Image 1: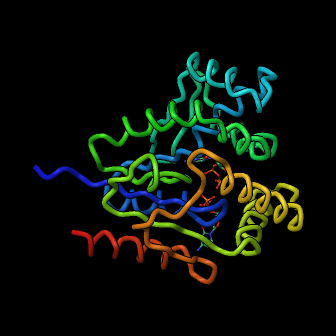
Image 2: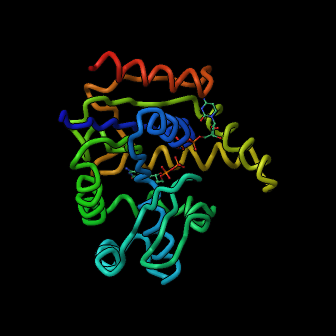
Image 3: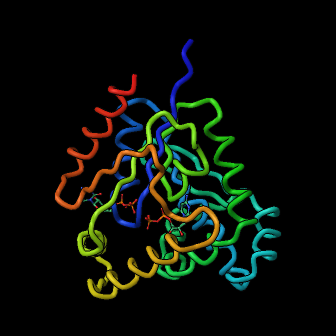
Length: 223
Ligand code: CDP
Ligand code: CDP
């Protein structure tokens, strides 16, 4: 039987990666893997233990002691650290504003990439993140770099917050997103970068179904 392919979706925060990756995975009966959730889970643990986000050695030791598990369910991916579910906790603003520093350490990234490559070794995954097409799955059959303007991405997060009944400040979100873009794009190890063979989709003026359709079309074209 033909081995299933892997689909890599990279791009900045709020571009719509996880939303469309989930839908593409569902359409193809593939497994959706949210690599950002893994960095967030490590960040959550580090904050709980008061580990300095700049201390790469301690973070790597922490990563050796914990198991980060992504559990797919019909209502979405549940995230566990050992036996504890942390799906909601890893989305806190404290985690969001610290995760890029934690994700900048080479030792942390090497271990995360190893785990992610293992998850995709048999194909059949849609994986989203920042370095999937460049480092985690350079052989992925389909690579997408999904982007949108900072203004649009901040607006999307703002609307999401309002829908959930959270307080939200559009200007602050814009600043936070731009800061994270800057940290993710300018770090030394595996920065957020478009793979040379990725197809760029700018979703600034696109609806979610349009983006999904574009990606499914790329998959069809590829095979
Ligand atoms: O959902 P959102 O776009 O806000 O972020 P995420 O995908 O949950 O990723 C959170 C952070 O983890 C990013 O800002 C990166 O610093 C880091 N990350 C990474 O370095 N490499 C990945 N493959 C995925 C996430
Ligand atoms: O994973 P990433 O941070 O790239 O973005 P997301 O969490 O999937 O999407 C951010 C928000 O933008 C969600 O509320 C989506 O419903 C919305 N959105 C989108 O993803 N794509 C569009 N073309 C329009 C809106």
